Length: 552
Image 1 (tube, rainbow, N blue to C red):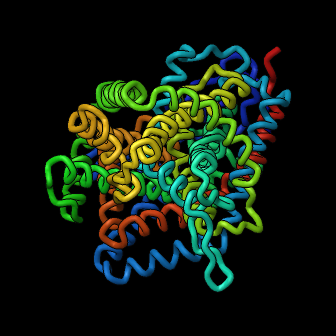
Image 2 (cartoon, rainbow, N blue to C red):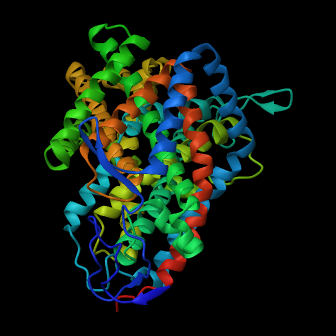
Image 3 (cartoon, helix red, strand yellow):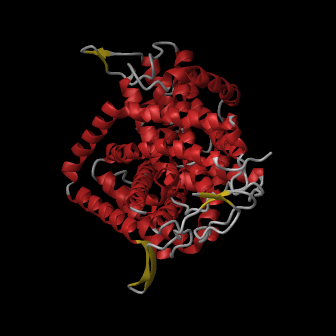
């Protein structure tokens, strides 16, 4: 039962501030941490939700042990899982992504957009400049480094090659119908397909989670954890096993989504070191990289958010902007400037066809690329959603959704246009095929190699990947720790250290047990059930917003 009051909810504690002004707090006797086990174990303080932590950690440990012990059997298993899920259920991911976008757009134009996060009188915690910068930081990641050159180039190449048929089935990887032999059409289609994967759809998934967590924590006074979103549907049962299952799914999705990114980052960093310094680019190097970077992440965890991840994020922001500016200035500057707007138009033009979940002829593209991406984004949604929820108190829902959907989308378009457009221009203008022929993880370095100061920029690229790795591991362990400690935001550091180590262990297990396919299979496997969770969350957030007072 709701009650119209700005204070008095016993669960609005442990770092979740009470609403400022009128807000419909949920009247519940549940207190954050009441089901936790708080004790000293081996001389370390622990404060854990017994059921969520125990089940999550045990299942994850069993998974890591089995994958490492059965490496030969793991690779065909993961390949089979990935092929079956994307081949039979890709429509679930595509349809879910469309629903998330439509729900966000619907809320933006509806009166529900006037609701203010944190109560009707809440003031924003950050300026627009600071807020946008943090949204940009959340939107940047290992993925942009790994796919910023490779994806536009790959879609351009496959579109230019056209379609191929075998036994009545398409065997090519071109998006939609391809653009055989037409370079300009292939550029347009390839960039539109890339932006589709980095634009509104993924950020709509983040926005649904972020807005849900923000409203139910800052306006309703519930714990900052996924189960709280389902209070309108489950009521007090959300504190029992139904809620435990939701939080456990959130832990799995976040862990495997992060591990996928960490595995991609390790493979790219190893390839970059091999490119620059001729170090071996094998599993041993990648395992050592993951261990070393996880150790750095642990130092960041111990240092705390202010001294650790915040400083690393600031370093990353500066380096990322410098690298982006460098590519724009020394690359095909005019083509990048005009391409930015042209690519946005092409994206809008191709969006209906690219987002169609049924009757697709381009099965390899829609299943192997889009379905994997949507599962990966959804796996990241608890992580990124909780981050943007924590920095968005005081904003109206309309402000929140417009900013979360548009700002990172525009940044991603600029990044892909600059890096991918430069690689395509090198191919068309200079006949350089090095990027096209390079392995996926080497395409960035092959493109930079054709620009001035190649050794320096390639080294900066490696540093960016590594620091993204560290900040993702640190921030991810903070989010997982919050979920497994019953929604507390100030749980003991040893628990975050545990989860940071587990993230590295999963990344190692997946790399050794099947490489990129295993990483993709893990994301898709955990992304599927969490897609269903988010579809239900769409209904819950609308119901939650309808009971909130709105700004004039």
